[in-house]
Each structure stands twice: as C-alpha cells, then as structure tokens.
Image (cartoon, rainbow, N blue to C red):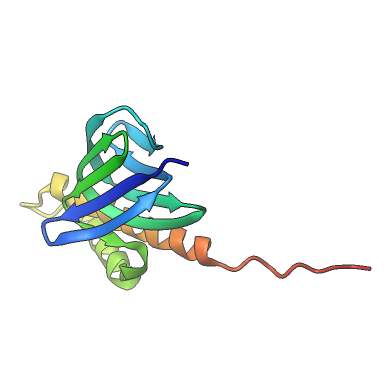
Length: 147
C-alpha cells in the first residue's frame, strides 16, 4: 500500500517526520482527511488536533494554526506552534483555559477579546488532544472465555 511522508515543522524545528497511511488535520473550513495520492492542496489550519496513522498506530498532536500542504506522496504541516499529545501539561492548559474564560466573562478594560478568545480556543484544544490520547491509550478489558 502507498504511504505518505508526513512532516510537522514549527519555528523551533521539526516535531514529526514519519510515514503514514492516513492524516487528519484541522482545516479552517473543517477537518481534512488525507490518504496517499491525494490531489495537491494548500490550506490554512485552525487550532486543533492532528492525527497521523500508520498501520493502525495513531499519534495525536496539537497544532495552534498554520498551513497544510498536501502532495500525492507527502504532507507538510507548517504550524505556528505544536506539541505531541503526551507532552501536553494538562494542569497548565487547564489554568490557561480558566484564565481566558474568566477574562472573557469579566472583560476588564483594555482586554483584547479576540486574542483572549483565541487563547481560550487553544487551551481547550490542547486539553482535548490530551484527553484523546488518554482515551486511545487505555487498554481494552481482558477477554473472558466462558466454557
């Protein structure tokens, strides 16, 4: 079966470089699923989750926006910021979510509501990606054979 070469790059450097048979990314118009031999495209990304699957093994990452370039045998994600699900500090993300929510509710003078709403969206998506990984990693219950 054909494979994609997937690269996820931020200003800090390359976060991911691997083969995949399926990639899902958060396009600004909705979720994008990419299989090998996809038609070429370039689209902006919104903050959200990226899922990279290869032979049934799924890896989840958070991206804070950026661009997705798709070629028939390659996917390149140029992210504003990104982190692997297992690297997300959930306590820090929850505190950021709580702070942004509080600022939006109180709306103190001089607050940039657009930037605060974006910070809230990023924190919520980071928490979601961490939860997806936790749920995905749970071991299935043992099989019981009854005779």
